[in-house]
Length: 328
Image 1 (cartoon, rainbow, N blue to C red):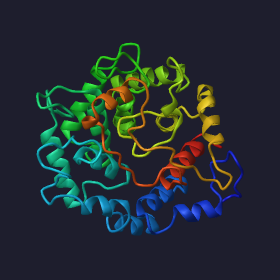
Image 2: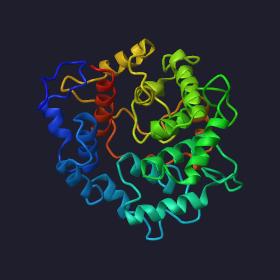
Image 3: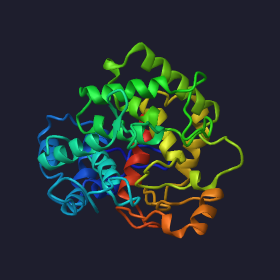
């Protein structure tokens, strides 16, 4: 039973809740039951929903395109083309609750880790074993979500994330300097069970979170319009919903410096209690867009679960989860 809906509340109306619990998308239904309604993983309805995670909906569609050897699109490059090759599919499957208990997914995980080895034994490395923050962070987070938190390769990647953090908090991707776009390392640490975090991980989280909070999730130079649009899949991009998800998951839901982002999120809620998918990546401006115009052959291939400009189950679920964590 749910409370009556009111604008600004993290409690969905009966109509919105029924929409999120529809059988057509077991992944959304599962996350709604466990995140919004607080059901135990041992709950009969949760267990039944998990049994259907890969049988219909988005997960089934993604897995239907998978080669039996474990890759998507082609075997030679698991990263290109963006955003339809293997790495991007795996990130989405992890978000949608599919884990290593699925034999096909386990095979793809092992292929992924074998191809993206990091010097020192971790994952997320280039062909030369060099780590790039966005790849290491995304891959480590996804593997934790898929049940690999005890794998030594994942643990070494977490150590790399801590080791490469800026002493003042935050990360730099490709030497660009500390910036809000470099959120992936913090997301990997957030996904790792709190009880297993080392003292150095806790310090890294505190410093990284402070970097984002000092900037109120959006203050970095001029206003960058894509940060104020909601997307999924996120890939390696940042927006205000990404920031809110991350900081509230780490226990900073009551920090007053989240007020701007929270109010922005509430303002974007439709009268019917839902949120829309604003755009699909690559949604970029400035120098990146100029580069793609000059090199159209390198422009990523957009891919999404839902059509932009329409009410989105995944955006609505993420937004409601954030507001619920904030006690609203």
